[in-house]
Image (cartoon, rainbow, N blue to C red; front, side, top):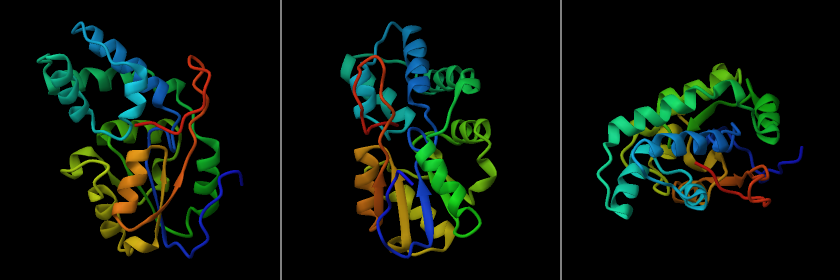
Length: 206
């Protein structure tokens, strides 16, 4: 397997979704660009990747503050998600991560811990044919403090009934890795596919 894991007796795997299980970051960025254009706003691609792991509504609030805007958070979030869902037929998985999912499914429980809302996560996992492999989904509406706070990972461990130190986290963002560390969990950083427009490899996502 190309993705090497820490040596330990892990009892559960916790996965971020976007950029970790699903190669969804380019589709999310297209959705953001289209949705924000309706309000005459922009979202630089480098910032999009740097903010990987932030909940959608937090991103909108931060963009409003940064640019002195007053875009309607709920309306824009719903519009962005609708644009993302319209692209799900293009979605592909991250092979190195799916390899580990296939190898351990049925042996240990899995959870998804995402900064995206449930409808987005369910849509992505359904498009990839993976939804039934996960015992627990912890999504943006399930916790108050997003990554790098540990709340989402700790909630997933509680729902699975597994001690945090026995959980291994798969993440593609520094915010996610920080959240896993804060939760007392070991983690593995999943490299993003090459972003064609920049011609570089990045380890960040949402």
